[in-house]
Image 1: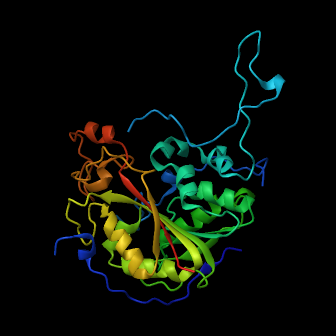
Image 2 (image 1 turned 90 degrees about the vertical axis):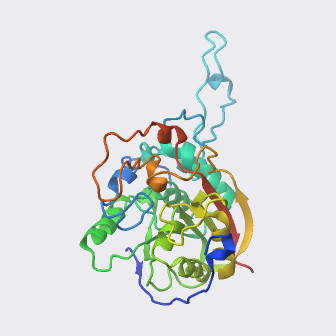
Image 3 (image 1 turned 90 degrees about the horizontal axis):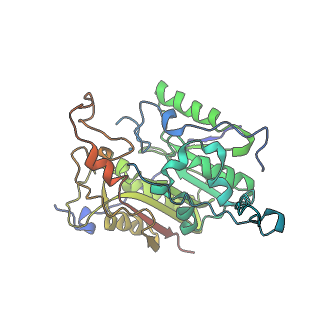
Length: 340
């Protein structure tokens, strides 16, 4: 049974933008077919999971650590010199989840999103309760849910509430159906939004993760509530992992983050004001080539590749080449902890 949590409670916080210097189990027959997460996102969701309105590069390393088999009959052949096949990752390991065939073509973006390295940096315990905030089409769900299920943990998908929207309700139903195979375990569905209550039972989560969403909360003016909700959901010592499009400190911060970029100092200030401690930051998801000043915001870059304002037809004369050369956005990767 899928559980949807709809409790209501929240507390407001006061935090000025000045804080950041702003102006004013083994897959077998039960293994599902590859899930096309990005294509499955409703037209009412943007690439980052926001209801209504996210280049070419060699895949040098998808983050999967496969060990060469040391057995003599699996080593290179002395007669032919043919290299041996590498051993598969151990079932239930993070490497196994990242290498899962059920991910379809999703690994093509691992060079930008670095799922294994990111989750290792966050120190996620797959035997605990993990909440992913606004998983959208489930790009990270494909990795997290099997990994957590294989280790006896609980994966909670906290989506934007339907609030009577037929298209959003259809999207949520589709998400549940696509991740209903035993491989993904029993996914718990929860709600998170501007007016929702507790995401889970207060103090019950071991980890809360969110990927490229802070700008969405800023657009609706509830970023302070968001971090307060995460703090309430976590047990003492629980972790909060945040990945977000990064705006250089030298550029002014729009309070509504219309470009999709957010200053790192502002995100840190939000978390600290909510009661979190900053544990560490990482450049795992950095892209120095991204100047964060594109005509249609972060969505000018791959994978969205927007060529005209929202609501208008794509511009056939727009030169996408320089933006494709940049690749996906520069992103901060921050680890916070709720004090013991």
